[in-house]
Length: 334
Image (tube, rainbow, N blue to C red; front, side, top):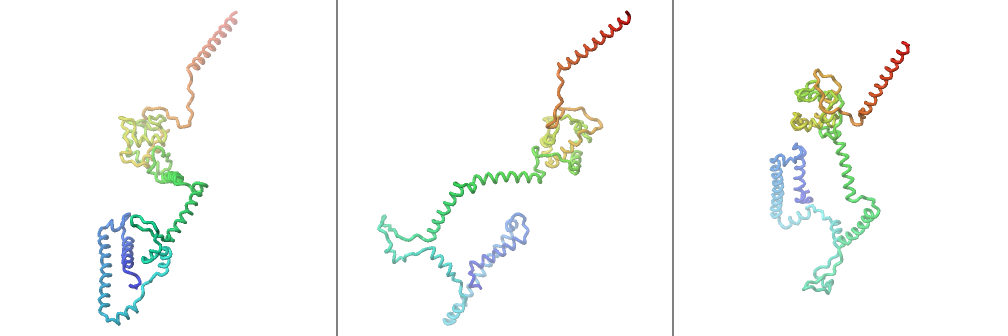
């Protein structure tokens, strides 16, 4: 077996087998074991050294024993020794691809008349491997031209880039749906699950009641239960206010910088909006503008002229009534 497999094959196979077993059984996380644990690198180096040393020692012993034999024993040993594979078919294929070569002593038969400063040129046949590769490249060029530039059956590299970029955007959006801590003011949505609102209430109680009171009625901060909002009353606006902070110098800090995660801020924002319409114990006066949900129609304002016209009509009707009453009274007296 030793003679069938040469040492330059046997040593790497044994070494990488041991290396693979070490990597399989040693838990090193994302890093290779020999990088995570330098002692393993030392162990592998020692294994490689031992394997090479064993090969050298065994080879030396065999050589010493062989030299101790007499001539007839050496011949008998060589005759009985297993023969290494000759790979005759591979060698024949190699010679065929390499092509015919003239021996040096016959090169005078194929020397051309060209002479460049004493450099002579041989008229050798092209090697078959080179010739077949050239033919294959021409066939490939025709197929490539027809496929990419004439019919357009296959997309170009730019088409592939655009397609992969579009798919990557879709994959990112799908990932964001499951990775809740990647949401921002543009992608946040109102949470209605009881668990989310309960956690939002807990966070509100830990961080917000000092300014907005437990029931959201407002104290230092504005009332969160009415329909008036300073920086917007939809989920995106409330999330943005919690995340980035309110107006400068007004006390509303950026809770993103205080360590709240995007999901936690979305839960707080959803809980705050759930306070709409509730009745706090001591509600603070409304601040900001009356918030109209997107798409809602604002009530039409009454114009001043219309009010005046209505008032004038009422006055005229009153005067006419008084005149009629006076006329009736005069008629009765007569």
